[in-house]
Structure formats: structure tokens, C-alpha cells
Image (cartoon, rainbow, N blue to C red; front, side, top):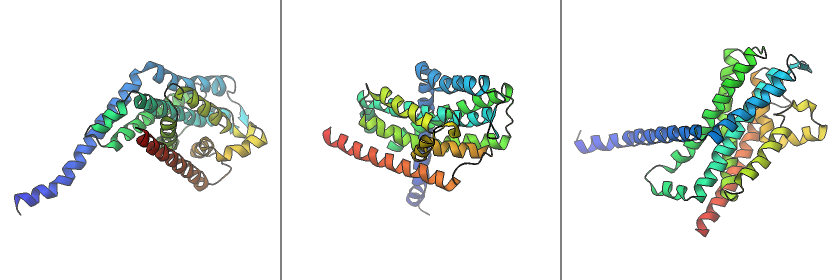
Length: 268
């Protein structure tokens, strides 16, 4: 075998290794940047933790609703609540700020693969989602006397990691449509009502009937039902219907982001 053929056969593998190294470095620095931004890290982690302490451990400790332990129910829903906040503000607001500052143009001009930039932001949101799940689980077990198996904990972690995708798509659409000065306000306008109506703050069965019907179109509701399913709580629909709901929402948000990006390219 000639030296040229050996080089040709080794080139793809070297390219994969190089891209993987770039992705890992970008993901690491994105997570460190978010962690060191105290206004972001403390609010994204603190918000669901404080809510869970008040509504899950203090006000409703040892309470049961329709045979459901409130502390364990809210452990699942507030884990999703925290992950959604990390995705919307870490990706949506963060990307909007970098876009307005011209940082995105610099990234695009660099030899870094474009996908590494977006995947690094998703990994940053995943990292904070895992941190939130760990803190809430620790509080639930030690203070709320919640019983969680290792299998349930692993499933909740895995669902949190996968659940970032629909809200990463929402964050990208938000960043490409809304100016940076308005992005935090719009993110809150989406985040808080979507969380409440999706049953993340209080059990969905306690909401008015019309809001329970409206929740069926919200990605927060579908993800919350899947999270509750990891704890053995029966949902109002099948797992497949919830996954299809999340997939449909992701595709719609990707379509909106694609259209907004093309318009941005034409105007620049």
C-alpha cells in the first residue's frame, strides 16, 4: 500500500478526531462561561430550587393529591422547569446577545465547524439541567423523604438531557427574531406562562379544565408527563404521543429559525 493511500484512508478519521476535539473544547468553555456568569448561573439554578423548597417541601410536605405524593411530583416538574430556563436563557438570550455584538460573525469566519457552536450551547444547558436535577433530588430525599431509585434518577437525568432539544430550537428562533434588548423580557413571557400552564408549578389536575386542554399543545406539558412517567405516575396520554408532540414542536421552531436566519442573511 502506498503512502498516499494510507494518508487518504487516515484523513477522515483525523478529521473526525479534530472536530470532536473542537466540540469538546467549545462545550467546556461555554459551560465555564455560563457558570462564571453569576447572574445567569445563580438565577437559573436558584429559581427552581427555591420554588421546590417552598411549594414542594414546605407548603406541601407529605401531602398527597389523587394518590400522588406532591414532593415527588414536583421534583420531576421543577427539574423540567429548571432545564427549560437554562435552555431559553442560555441559548435564546445568550445567542441573541452574541448576535447583536457581532460575536456570531466572528465565529462563522473561524475554521470551527458551525455545528460545534450550537452543540456547545446545548451542552451548557444540559450541564445546568443535570445540576438542577441533582440538587432537587438531594433536597427531595433528605428533606422531603422522597423515595427515588437509582434507575428513576438515571431516567430523569437522561430525559433532562434529551429534553433540551425542543427548547434549544425555541431559543434559536427567539434569538433570531427578537432584538437582544428585548430578548430577556420575551423569554420570560414565554417561559413563565408556558411553565405554569404546562403543569410545572402545580399539578396539572389542579388547573381549570380549559387550561388542562390548552396544556396539550405545550412542550412543557409533554416533557413533564414523560418526567412523571419515570416515577411511575400515569400520564393522560401515551409516551409516543408526548414524544411526537415534542418532535413536532422542535420541527416548527427549527422552521421558524431557518426562515428568520435566511432573512437575516439577506439583510446583512
